[in-house]
Each structure stands twice: as C-alpha cells, then as structure tokens.
Length: 105
Length: 118
Image (cartoon, rainbow over all chains, first blue to last red; front, side):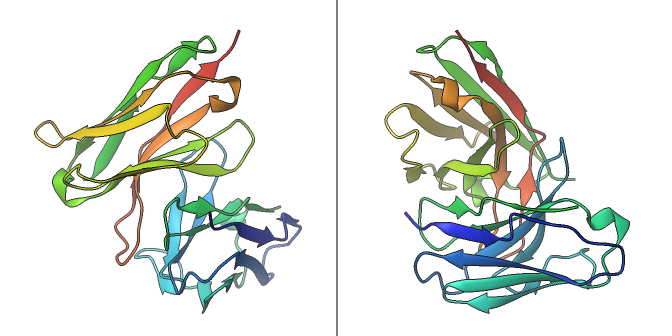
C-alpha cells in the first residue's frame, strides 16, 4: 500500500500568515493527489485535485504543487475560516490512502 | 443539487453485523464510482472501499477485506456496505463519497456513526 506522510502534524499560525503543508508518498503517484479541508463534525471539503487544480469555488489563496512523491499545499493570507485540519489523499493506486492530517490552529 | 445521505449506523457488539446504506440524488448515480471512507473519533480519514459505476469492480482496504462487502443498486441510486465480524477498531463515522481523480467531481454524505462495544 502507498503510505502518505504529512508534515507538520500541527501548525500554529495567525491571520494573514502563509503556511505550507507537505505530503510525501511512499512511491510514485504522478499527480494523482487531492487536498481536503475538514472542520469538526463536518465532512471533508475538496480544495485541490490532480495535485494543483483548484476546485471550483475554492479561494485562490489555496494552491497545490508537486508530482511524483512530494507535494505541497500552500495557504497565503490565512483567513479565520481556514483554521481547520487538512488531509492529502492519493488516487493513484488502490487502496487509496490519506495522510494523517495537519491541524492549523 | 447533488446529495448523498447515509443511514444504518448504530451500536453493535463485537462480532456483530451492520448494513450501511447511502441514498444518492441529484446526480447520474451509475456514472460514478462510489466509496466508503471512515473516521474514528478524533482520528484521521481512512478509505474503506470502492465500487465501480457498473458494480463490476470492487476494492477494499486490508483492514476490512474479507469482513466488509460493498454493493450498489443503480436502479434505486443506492450504495451499501455490509459489515460483518465487527471489531472495536471499526468504531467510526462512515461516509459515502464520490472522490475526485481526473475531474473535481467530489461529494460526501454527512456520515453515519458506527459504534462497536462490548
């Protein structure tokens, strides 16, 4: 199975900050990576798919990059609504797998 | 509006069985592979299983292989997860979901809680 390792597991930030979350795959996954935002008690919300494609309706302060085994999610000008947990997920090979999550607090 | 609505969660003893259902509306159900994803209390997301649009192909996480069975009824726009031999570690909120790959088609239900306790 492909292991997805996210770092950091948590990040302390302030409104207006720029933060970067990294996701590493244990093997090559091309660009088959998605990023989600999740708030307590809610289902995840898709932010980015195919590593860098911004989902419709998602603010442009979110961006994704990378291919192969290393990927990043960047949030610029952090807003109050962005304090949440973020997950990456590989869609290259079954079983699909998620990273362990990064809490932005 | 696209909607996925899970049902069937509840309390069950170890070794017991439960069948989850997911009703889809507002989309062409048979066009989409359907997934089950779970989240244990306070933990991360775990992909559980997927079934192709036609129902011909299925895949499972190793943690549930041989115990869980995914199925669908395209005539009723319904997705199912039959869970047998349940364990304490299966306790989680179970989501049905359409997950993105080439396109941004992505929909999640609100989740249904399964609690396995003795």
